[in-house]
Each structure stands twice: as C-alpha cells, then as structure tokens.
View 1 (cartoon, rainbow, N blue to C red):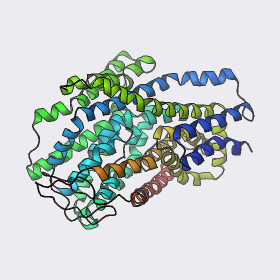
View 2 (cartoon, rainbow, N blue to C red):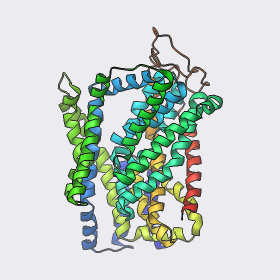
View 3 (cartoon, one colour):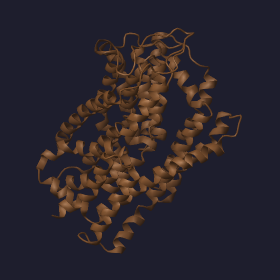
View 4 (cartoon, rainbow, N blue to C red):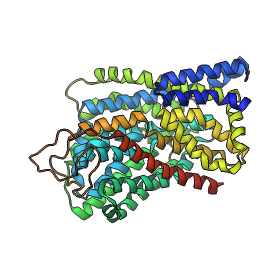
Length: 507
C-alpha cells in the first residue's frame, strides 16, 4: 500500500507531462501531492525536512547560476554573430560528406550542448547540416541524435542532481556515465551516417566514425577521471572537432577561415575552459573540496563571468549585453523555477522514505529490474525533456533499488543519468524545435560539398549540391515530425536495450 502511495507524485508528473501540461505546472502538482502524502502517510518532522532542503541550498544556487550563465552566453553568441561565423567556418572546413556530418554530430553538437545546454547544440547543428545539403527532416534527426553528452550539458548540473539525490560521489558518477556512453556515441553516430548518406555510403565512412567515437569517448572518460565532471563534454566535443579537422586537413588539404577570425570567435569558450581548469587546480592545491568556494570557482561562477566579458572578447561594436541579459532573464526564471521544484520534489521523496518504498517494490522483481532501469530513466527524460528533472524524480529510487538488489548504486544511478539524458533529446519540445529550425534554415549556397547521393526523406527533397550562385531559403515542404520522432526513438531504443544488457553484466 505504501509503495503504491509513494508512486503517486511520480505518476502525477508523468501523466500531466504526457497530457501536454507544462513542466512547471506538472512539477508543482507533483510537489503538492508529495506534500499531502508527507502530512499523512509518510509523516516526517519539520526539522528533518528543513535540514534536508538546507543541505541542498548550495546545489540550488549553483544550478541557478549555471542556468543563467549558459542562457546569457548563448544569447550573446547569437546577437554578436559569433555562432553564425563559427558555423560558416566549420561548414567550409570539411568536404568529405561523412566526415562533415560526424564533425557536426559528434563534435559541434556535444561541444555546444555541454557548454550551454537547453538544446543549444541542436540550434547550432541543424543550420550547419542544412548547409551541407541535407534535407530538412534528416537534418532534424541528426541534430537530435547529436545530443549524446547531455549528462554533461550546461556543465553537468543534471549529473550533479543525480549524484546528490542518489548519494553517490559526483566524480564516480561522471566516470561511470562516461563508460556507459560508449555505446551511445557509437550507435547514435552510426545511425546519423545512415540517415544522412544511406547504408552503403555510411559503411564507407565507418573509419571516420571509429575515429570520432574513440576521440569523443576517450576524452570524456579521461576528463571525468583526471580533471573533473563539468568540462568532460566540452573538451570531448573540442577534441573530436580537432581530430576530424586534422584528418580532413591531411586527406583533403582544405583551407578554412583565417585563424585570427576563428580564434576571436571561439575566445569566450577558451576563456571559460581556461578559467575552470585554473580554478580546479587552485582548489586542489588549497585542499578545498566542498563548500561555497567550490561553487564560486566552478561553472556557477565562471559562466556568468564569461558571459559578461563576451562582448569585449568578441569585439562587439554595439552594446548588446543589456538586451541579451533581459532576454536571458525572461527565459531563465521559468527554466530555473521548474528545475528547483523538481529538485525539491526529489529531496522530499528521499527524506520522507517514498523513494525507498518505490525501490523496495521494484526490487521484488529481482535482477530483471536491471534491464528495465534504462527505460525508467528514459521515460522521465522523454516526458520531462530535462535530464535534471528526470534525475530529480528517479535518481534516489534507482540508488535505493540498487541497494536492495545488492548492486552498485553508482552504476545504476549512472544508467539513470545516461538514459534520461539521451531520452530528453527526443522530448516533444526538442522535436518541435528541431523541425522548426530545419524548415527555416537555408540550404547550401557555396563552399562545402553536399552529401549528393543521400536518399530522399520525408519533409524534403534529396540532398543535392547547390550552385554557388543559388541559395535555398526554406524547405520545400514541412518536416514530418512523426517521422523524425519515430526515427530518433528507434535509435534510442537500441541504445537502451544495450545499456540494459550492460547493467546486468556490470554487477
């Protein structure tokens, strides 16, 4: 009986989200349900509740600062034209169709998404894919499949929430999530090539796929292991881009944009990465591992600082910071409020024992639960559209279930983290965003060679090389969002099956 009652807040969230209710209202309804249960069936002292939420206060502040800094930086990069210049440079640097697709999908998208989050990787990637000559629907699919480093999106606040609520070490969770991401990178990368080029030409590009997957996975694992969790996706995307561009340079001898222009465009990212690395070194030297200094010296401090300095770093000729800050603030409060409510809900489920009741009920099915664990995380990610929200709902339950099954809590929370993160890329909001971007993004006008023999796709014609004088301004037909969603979910299903098998064997 208690287990059934304990699932009510989660069920309320999932049902409301499935019915199309906004995430904020769904989370508030679930929180209200949890509060009623706390006052009746799962009575907990106010002092205990207060202590638990006070313990989460640094995490809340850190999340809010990271979210605002990421949104503001993205807004500034758009207003100054830096994102557009970066896209033109990357699009012209690689003429091999398969390598160009992988450069965007496993390099640009992970880099942008890991740095700022909120689907920014899709916003950056899809125009690039259209410039390569891909039909709109296929560009939308590949843009969504590129969201493979969401556990480190926005410099990893979602993973931080999973670690806090699952009571596992943050770095350990990052390492385990990196290990589990190997099949994610490989399966999604292979699927992107098939979608873009067709099976035969995708097979011919398997060498480039192997290079890209190894570069991304090895870097993400190494950064989590030796540097820290937040920068793993950012550096993974950077290294992957660098490796593929080097391969392209050696094989194709292509030119690119002037180095000075490229360096200036990327200077905010370089400043942010350098600041985070130096801060981590200083903290380690001083022996500081927790407390407010770690918050200030981490992404929560450096992202807003980088955003404030971005106009100067880019040499903006017109004042853009004020307008960008106002626009960012309008988007930030809604995202942050929703995230905080989910976090409070997750904390409440944990401290009142509701998560434990859910876990004990799940544990009754035995080791078979390990196969289902990725799908539970995926349901949360798909419906909430947020790794942070899904982890707030399920991370504690996954950890409790692991303990009941005598399984590693860190491993199962990592399964939750990776599965929820990947599935969030197929949420309705992400799919609609990708479809709109693909429909409105212009096709190739010059420079990079299009994947000329890519097969036809719903929502657009075949990808053909466009003459330099011709610019395609819009798609020929609306993108079939149902085809996009089915394609992405089919690829994700294969990933979840693989992760389920791995979780059983992992032990």
